Image 1 (cartoon, rainbow, N blue to C red):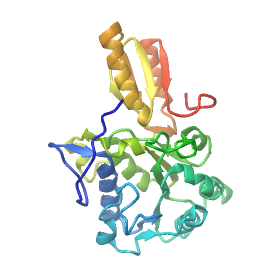
Image 2 (tube, rainbow, N blue to C red; image 1 turned 90 degrees about the vertical axis):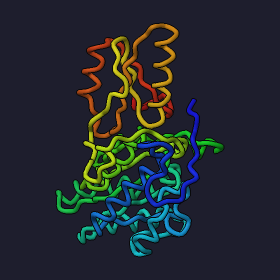
Image 3 (spheres, helix red, strand yellow; image 1 turned 90 degrees about the horizontal axis):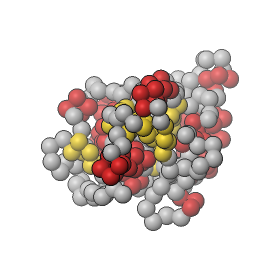
Image 4 (cartoon, one colour; image 1 turned 30 degrees about the vertical axis):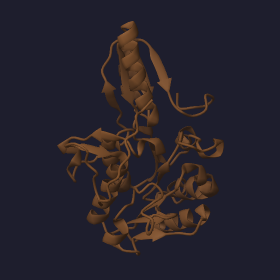
Length: 294
């Protein structure tokens, strides 16, 4: 599995090991920093996001830069602060809340706000009231936690009309996709992964540019191949790339690895194009086998 690199840096933006190597947690931090600087309506709300710099230090330095009116610590009540964030998005004053769940397992405490308030109101108001906001935090497999703290909610949220659901893998994904999520007029569920926070990836100058934003609903081919298409998202992309390397070295099987990036809307065109080329399909995810994304 992954060799996890741990960040010891304490800067606001990137922790750099070698040129263009950026840790996932810092890529997320950069995205929020840049969007909060660009748009005064962007606010961050959640447990320990301010004074403690976030449970996983993703919001490090943002309180000092933007103040307590825009980086807001909350009590331990997911239903309460998720409702505050949804209400702020409804307010019609240009606010774009980023609501952080310490883990998406705790989003179950706020499921009514996510599914019935954020996702449905645009439809129930005949298009008059939108909910431009982001629910973000770690999802799926994690280190040293039990079953109730390591569930994957990708398939759950991807079934809900009105939500955009994104699941980044690399630092490039995290920076470019979170910026897109913040700018999107719809409620976005942004599924990160705790294990990946401390992993560094190379990021191009193009993606590091403040104006670079990913396209929602567009997948990315992480590795070209001809024999089989491996389709995955989030943490599963790394597993897929490792498997592809082993299959190539030991069996001569040339795998194509497709990183979905966005789960709703799903990039079915790219999936079909890949499978037409390879004629074989394998899906990889860390959730339950029944009714999953695959």
